[in-house]
Length: 198
Image (cartoon, rainbow, N blue to C red):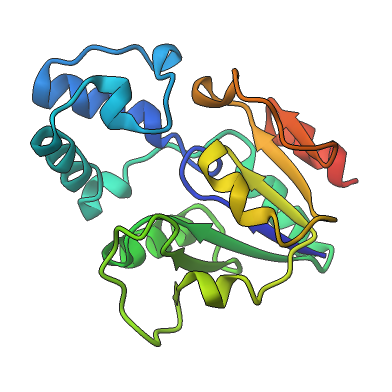
């Protein structure tokens, strides 16, 4: 089986870290549980300039490396790999974040997973023809049996794979969204993901 796994807020606690950054930089004190939008500019009430500053700070290598692992993520993914499954991390992070993201995975015992930066939202200056950058036309040629994703904005990227099972990692910004179909299942933990795959 082939697995698509999103990085931020599936493998690591990115939004929790960003609440701290927004508080430190702009005194925007929004508790994690009240981050109601995947769009952090909207969640924190930031200007365009503030949002750009937030993104730059949150993607500095040392900051990316400091993000806490989502409990159970690496253990479950390693179990899948041990069973012969193929795991690909498909992130919307910019290509400039590739090296620290790869290092984060390696430091969390995920050396065997593949990592791709997918130009999901058309906002990155991607390096053409690299081994780790995916444009949408490249991504749409890939096949997956399972996806693990938290962002409702990313669900559209699964439309070409109607038989794929999508496990929606439960987060404050997706709790009110209606899941698109019967193949979508809300998961509260990596333990639940393990049960569904088994």
